[in-house]
Image (tube, rainbow, N blue to C red; front, side, top):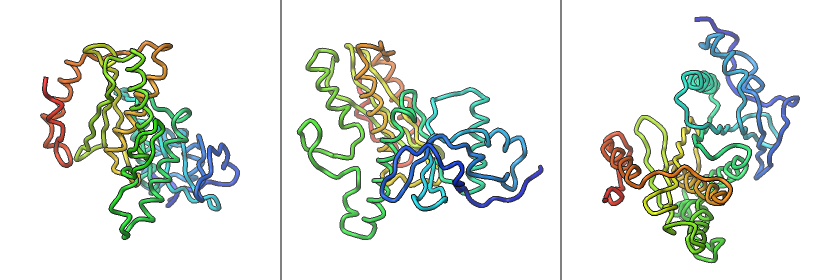
Length: 286
C-alpha cells in the first residue's frame, strides 16, 4: 500500500471558499466543495485509487467558522442505494474524512436533498448544537432542544423544534380537505448498535394504503445537538410533509398497511441489534 504526504486536518482555502449558503451564529456554510479542495494531500494509509475516487467528490454542505478556514463538519445527502459503485465511493469518502478527522453527517433519504432541504436542516443542527453547548452543566440541560415547548405554526402548543411539526399540521388539514384517510402522521425511531440511527414516518392516504418515508442518519464524529434517532424520525416526517404538499401534482407510491405492519414486525424481531431495544410493540397490532 502506497501513501502520500500526511494531511492532519481539513481546511477551506480562500480561493475555493465560495458558494456560501448562509452565515449563522459565527459559522459559515459552504455548498458543493470538492473533498480535494478541503484535503490538499493524500492522507497516509490511503491508496492512490481511494484518493482519486474520493477527491473528486463534492460534499453537499460544509460548515466552518466565519473568520477561519477550519472545517467543523460536513453534511451529505444521499438516496438509498445498493449499487456497488456508489458504495465504493461512500467507503472512499469515509476513509479520507476519517483519516483527517473531518466529522460528516450523512442523511440517506429518497426525498430530502441538499438543494431544497439542506440549508434548513443545517440551520437546525447549528442551533441545536449551540443550545446543547450552552446548556451543558446547567438546569437548562434538563430540557433538550427538541423538547422546548412553545406556540406552533397552527396555533397549538407543542415542541417548537420538531422538524415534523408543519407536516403534522399539514396532515390534519389534508384530512379535513378529504385528501387523506387519516389525520395522524405516525412514526418510529431506532438506533442500530453497530450502525446508523433510523426514523420512519407514515400517513394513511387511502384506506389501507400509506405514504411512507424512511431516513437514516450516519453520524461520523458529528454531534447533532439532539438525539440522532429522534432527529431521523423528525426528518422522515419532514419528508412526508414535503410529499403531502405535492399530492395533487405527483401521484405517490403507496405502501399497503399490511406490508408496513410486516416491516415493523421484522424490525421488532431484530430488537437485540438495537440500542435501547424496540419501543413500538403497540404498532405491531393488526
